[in-house]
Image 1: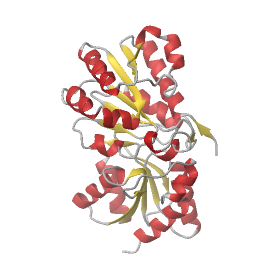
Image 2: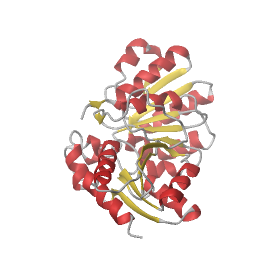
Image 3: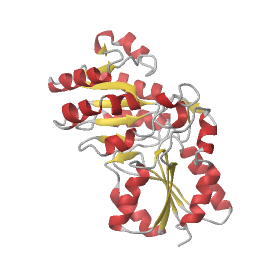
Amino acid sequence: MNTKSTREAAVRALMEAAERDEKIVVVSADSVLAGRLTPFLQKYPGRLIEAGIAEQSAVDIAAGLAASGMKPVVISYAGFLTMRACEMIRTFVAYPGLKVKFIGLNGGMLGGEREGVTHQFYEDLGILRSMPGVNILTPADAGQAYNAAVAMMEIEGPVYLRLGSGREPEVFPDDTPFTFGKLREVLNYGEDLAVFASGFIMNRAIAAMDQLKAQGVYGILADISTLKPIDREGVVSILRRTGCAVAVEDHNFYGGMSSAICEIACHYHPCRIIRLGLRDVYPRSGYADELLDAYGLSVQDIVSGAKEARKH
């Protein structure tokens, strides 16, 4: 399967937005190279602030800029933002509702072959999901990352955009729409079950749906590209039609997308849901595909989870 860089796609969207709006400025926490920001720096040298390896300071700088009418975007590794600078995001950005955007790199296992467990992150979504007022975007590939970054700049208040390693599987045509706050039915083969997927494992979810179809199981695949605010009505509608589901995510299964799906089901349509994600473990380093297979996110794991979900 072809791969494209979500990082380059998001920066392309930022550069286009910056050309239209001189208030847009990027704050880097030693992330010019990792964030693929060199083209932005070359074109707008006066609109990129390098804070160094100081994520807390980067968020504070962005908060000050936003309070002064600027439109800052902070870029760093997902965990360095959501863990090192967690309090700063909460108190100085989310609490006052400032229009600061965050781009988190190396979300999930896709960075495993290059930098290891200290630089690949599985807790970021759970941390920010618990923080009032923070919107969370989890695009499925580079085309969707570009469209999500475009949408992000128009959203009021803080937004977190989760990106991967820069080598994500290409799943959808680049012009596939991205709609903030809405899920999208990627496949609709029937109503035997639902598969909810988010992030850069969508190619595996699609392959699993095709295997299930070949075995006579016809379901719906939904892309949860906005984790917060999640499309509650869309989720409930699908659950009412299928009566069971699998939720697949490259994240600790506490606090992430599968938790959100279960919370919605509990309140609005109780049914059997199988959750596939990291089961409260720290995965080892390795090639992304091998890691996903080793930690329960293979195509066959999704197929098996679907069959288990239907035992109700």
